[in-house]
Length: 228
Image (tube, rainbow, N blue to C red; front, side, top):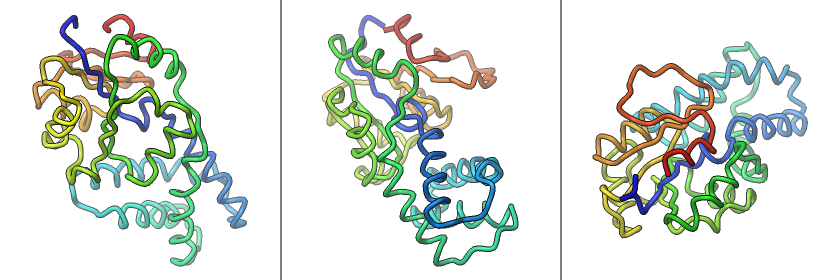
């Protein structure tokens, strides 16, 4: 790892605790719009549906607007809760607007960024929506750690498409050989980077089983110190 000079992080689910911040956003919205539904029951159904639609979004099979609407529509239908399309649209918009106000990070996020910042140039590559990623980083006070923030919407392609990695290296003035990608998605971050001939570290806080041993895996962010 002595040749590494640039460290590219994913944001959601890697540094920024998407699930915790998302749960808090839904709790606020359910209360504000008086949605008489057990939030725990809804979230239990919503999360795998959201995961499915993000995969379809990465694969260019649904649009941003379809993702935002359909993940909610399908979740409410699954728990047999009657809700108007108009309210679903309102919730979809409010969810995106409110969520960046929550600022929970994964344990060790600030510590590892402080550890790395004087040794490497740090950057973000994210598939998250353009209009909210900067807000998330500002509210959680981590924006100053990063030299470049590359969003899929600004590039026009999403991870794992090699073009987003190519663009990221170009704007960061980095090379494949002196760069590494750290993220939570095997498909988007790890396979995307490795197929582009970049090193990768898989952030696996849930300790999900992976038979692939061709890349490094950490279960906590502070474990990255072992390698960088």
